[in-house]
Image (tube, rainbow, N blue to C red):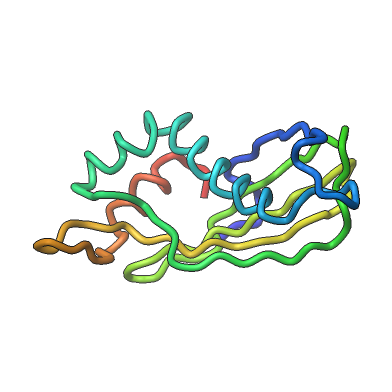
Length: 141
């Protein structure tokens, strides 16, 4: 896979994103990872619901999420969050995220996502080959 970002979002950090110490409250980074992925789907594939309809899926959901917080982001900072497809597995895709403020890395994270399809009254992770073809067809990977 490439290290060239396939997508990025810009986040204006505000007071409401910060904790009592004045730094970004860490759960916001997980929210922003999710926002980046879903904004990518919106810009390139008409959104999550449209992709799920094409794939016969109930959702493209999280299986695992992790982050390393490298340095603080503060009220007033502009965070550039980049997303890269790190690798594909039979039933999952790993997305890597890097967030920077003025070129300084503040967060590095990853999501493991699966394509979830109906399985009777439950849902299960399905092969991601069709999602991979869709994303790689963008020419961003």
